[in-house]
Image (cartoon, rainbow, N blue to C red; front, side, top):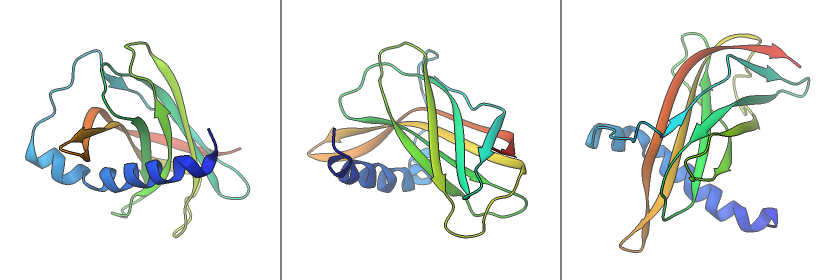
Length: 146
């Protein structure tokens, strides 16, 4: 699939992910216990500032595209930095995910970081793609130079 055709979908996923705080407060999560996402305890920072985060996920049943998104924060900052997104397959099997991205402001440093990973579907409802959250994990990790 050409990269250009994925851009509108990824932009839509990013916009829907921005609704996460609203959706989380509007309805409690009721994910199936088979729907999970994990975060590896170590992430990397390349010499050019590219951050790589990884883990595993499992999800069931979807009617729209599903993505594993990730973000991180460091120190006492309330700023979260989005670190890429990966297309997910919701077949009940555990799959690996890895997201990479550069932080545009306040570069991250090696050391402790708070990572949040989300498995989110853009489910069509009345012609609009609305977010449905399959799994969410927030975890402290260590960033190392690669």
